[in-house]
Image 1 (cartoon, rainbow, N blue to C red):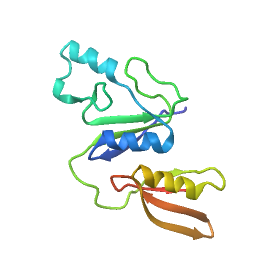
Image 2: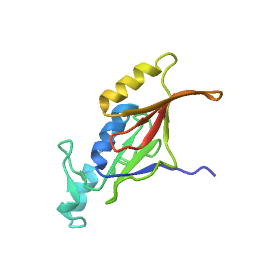
Image 3: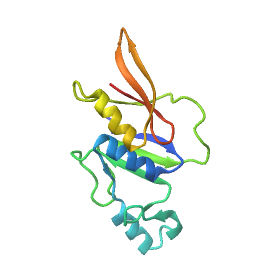
Image 4: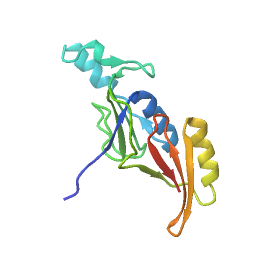
Length: 149
């Protein structure tokens, strides 16, 4: 049996994180506005649970990005394949991630990719060069570690 999954990442600002990662990975920010408008229309969700970050309704405390080639549910806008979901949490990040994303640059393009990601708001922590390979460790705008190989 194969299971569907998504990576859920805690965030102070889920919409800013979704925007960063959509640009970083070439993904799409999910559009949940049709479902949200329907739920608001029947009184099943309060207006205060929404924001309009891209000129369309979105959940205040959740934002997701999905691979543009993967299927998605047309009613909810939720991706059914490769997907990152950012959820608002009240506490700040305080320790190293126990799980992180590895981004694979095209051959010979790692430094160019790192520069592009820094331009989007990432920070460089260090470069690693060892027997297992070489990569750069970066931080996303909220301080979550990820690697560029």
